[in-house]
Each structure stands twice: as structure tokens, then as C-alpha cells.
Amino acid sequence: MRSFRTAVSLALPLILATMPAAPAHADVKDGVDAWQKGDYQGAVAEWRPLALSGDADAQFNLGQAYKLGRGVPADLSQAEDWYRRAAKQGHLQAEDNLGLVLFTANRRDEAMPYITRSAERGEPRAQYVLGTALFNGDLAPQDLPRAYALTKRASDAGLGIASARLAQLDSLIPLDQRQRGLAMIPEIEK
Image 1 (cartoon, rainbow, N blue to C red):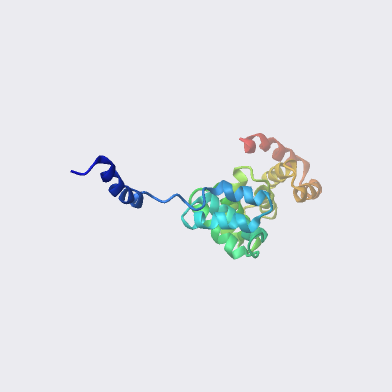
Image 2: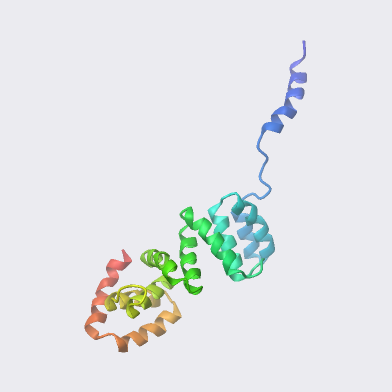
């Protein structure tokens, strides 16, 4: 009869073979740490396998890398693809950036649903874009009070281009409509 030690030594290779291997890339944070140290290629190397396996945070981060051209050549098409993958999984920052990338690529009709949702969540760049669309009445029905309110919110968040636009709107939108816009802000903030 075999001893317990012999049985374990024979079974151990089988047990080890059936155990899942530890991932080569521990988690998204390893890539974030590399990114923060300026090791963009290292960050991308950490995120790529995770992104390919479906990790939404890694997909978003790869989108950022392609958008900014850090660790990979700048490529808005690749950025869009990675943002879209993450957005489909409910990654809100990816959805925000996807809308802005589509808008910048002049695919504005496709971008506006993303822009609208992002603006409703309080994303300042999206609020600025939606505010401009509401002022112009070209990608959304014209709504001067709401345009003013969204532009004011974006300006208050520190978006410089929104502050400059707000100064223009002060001379283009009648006072009563600007006041209605200001009154909307507490509701928008909810």
C-alpha cells in the first residue's frame, strides 16, 4: 500500500495542472502605477491583456493611451474602439470620452446621445457641447435658458472655453432667459 506521502507527491502535479494560473498582469492598478511614473509603454503592456479579456477599466485606459498617444501612437480610431468596448459594459468615463471623440470626428449625430447622458451626469466638457448645441438649435432643439445653465455649469467647473462662451452668451441671450437658466442650475445639479 502506498504511503500518504507518495500519494500526495503523485497527485500534486495533477492538482497544480488543473489550478488556474496566476495572471501575468496582476491588475489594472499595476498599469496605473506605471502610467503615473511616466512608463506609458509599461502601462499599455499591463492593460492590453486585461482589456482583451474584457476588463472595462483596462479598455478605458487603453482608449486614453491611444487618444493621448502615450505608450502607443495616437490613434483616435483605436481610442474610439476601446472606449466603445468599455462603454458597452457601463463604464461611464468611457461613455463620456466616446461621445467627445465622436463629436470631434464630426460624427455629431452619433455623438449626441452620449454627450447628452454625460452632460446629465455633470461632465463639464459634455455640458459645454450640449449647451452650445442648445444655443444653436442645430443638434438639439433650441433652448436658450438650458444652454445658458449648462454653459454656466461647465464654466463653474473650470472649463476655460465655457467661461469664454458664457461671456458671449451674456450679450446674446436676453436677461430674462439667462435668469431662467440660472434658476435651472439647482435642478441640473441633482
